[in-house]
Amino acid sequence: MRRLLPVLGTILIFSSLIIGCTQNQVEMKTETGAKITETENLNENETVKVFFYYSPRCPSCVKIKPYMNLLREEVQGIKFDFCDVSNKSLCSNESLWVAKHIGLFGVPTAVFIQGDRVAVFVGWKKVAKLGVYLEELGFEVPEVVYGNTSYDVQECIDCHEGRGINPPSTYSCTYCCHMAQIQQAQNQTQNVTQGS
Image 1 (cartoon, rainbow, N blue to C red):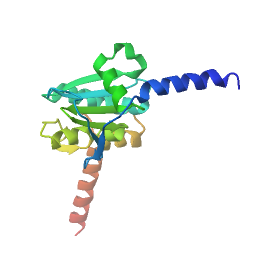
Image 2 (image 1 turned 30 degrees about the vertical axis):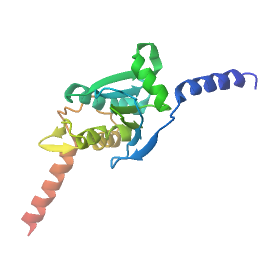
Image 3 (image 1 turned 90 degrees about the horizontal axis):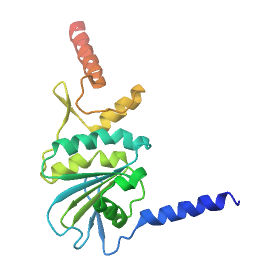
Image 4 (image 1 turned 60 degrees about the horizontal axis):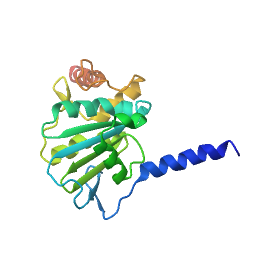
């Protein structure tokens, strides 16, 4: 029990630092499942920002970080700010402030801010929908394409998991396991046509 008390104390202190406060907020949900919070004067100018919170030791973060890197490189008109929560000294003051005020409690988490609009995406499956949300707002988002076919980020991650391979390290694919499925379907169609 004596060994457990310091551990519990550390957990309580860490939790209180992360949780922060979420006063004067009204929550809504978008079609993509993002939680939207309208907060007065959160960001007075209309700069569009996305804060991404992750840890390199988090398997879910490893799955989605390449997609977030793609968005950061390709989406115009949005300032992306990445914060490695395992080394907060490297995080911007603004990302730490946002983390405190949204009540950051887990990673991966992406936070979209434009004026008074705040959308919070928690977990890799929700973060994977950030691109859809940005498209809904009129931003041009790169597609995950292989062989003239577009794929959802979650499809790529699920496919890699199903094959027992590491998550995609990039979404600019040179090989796609979906192509095997497409070729198999084409072969079945040809066999049925030839058998008739």
